[in-house]
Length: 445
Image (cartoon, rainbow, N blue to C red; front, side, top):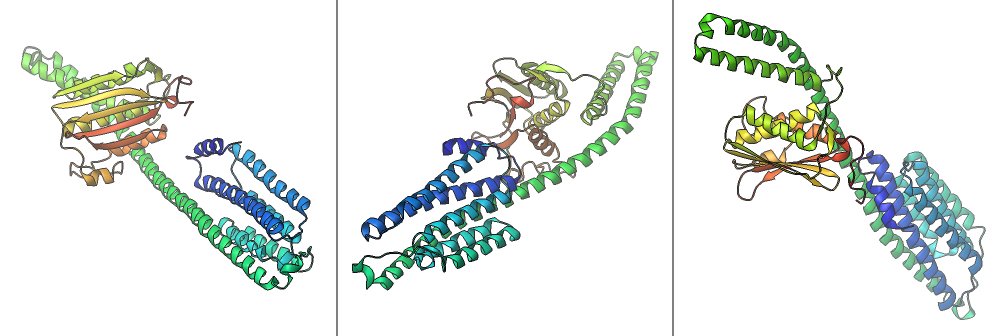
């Protein structure tokens, strides 16, 4: 049983509920404290028995140490499971540690043993780690244990040469106990506070994510309603333009006929966009999902942007390797198009798009030679209405990009190129795109 395997198990919980992950980390702290306690007890028993010649019930004390070691092994085995660690389990772990300490003290002088104040360490950890009800239980357990040890214990049989110096030995033991408790409290309470702080940060992130997703839901409802409203006038315009194209006045004038054809193409493009909005909103799901491949999916997006934005040059490099089958997601296509459109707006002359594979992830990079992102834009990257264009209502494109990619388990990063221009990188897990499990998708990670 290794701490490395336990660490890998905890890594799987990075996206779990913050309270769940924090409880597991706190249980790990108790395991580490128990190792320290066992090592300290062995050193103390050896020093008292060999250094001072004090007779101790070594067999019984050894059995208690073995019990603590077995408890640690069982706890490590428990943490191999991804089931959440409960507050009751933390309470039981602390209670068993206190019971083990009580047994050792019973065998070595009871409450007269200066190390009896180690109970305060367990009480402090219980108050910090556990809710009020369990914390009160820990306090009651400690008080009862200490009270019992004042009456029932095996007295220490000190050699005659130490009998006259008993009080000095007791003071030395209290000093050692005080130093140990102070050091352990400073170390472990600080680490527990760090775990709680990380939990609070994660909770704040989840609240922010929930607010953003609620914003997206409202935007989706508005977009769906607008798409419904726009469908009828766009269809009417298409019919009128088709009728005009047949009229002699327009049919006999090549210039007017060409302009009508351009108008019809743009109207039909608007209708396709409206249809895409309805598809993304889930209102036209009667058709089976479209199956495509990585090369075809991203190549079609780039070709579509080249046709729609007939300015400059959009270079495309496909370094993915094998042409993995994936499902064409209209929402993903829309947000990827938004990233390229933003790059074209900032850099009309040239935009570069590349797709590659990194382990179990697909990485799409869009870079340009425009002015790049400002520090303020990067600081608020992915937040709604964070735009460098200075127009009301803008800045939703990258907000939608970040949230759609996050829904797929990926991430979006932005920065500036050393030679000038901006770069936006989208990392998507292949498991979220591929049909079935993609081979080599990071099992070794």
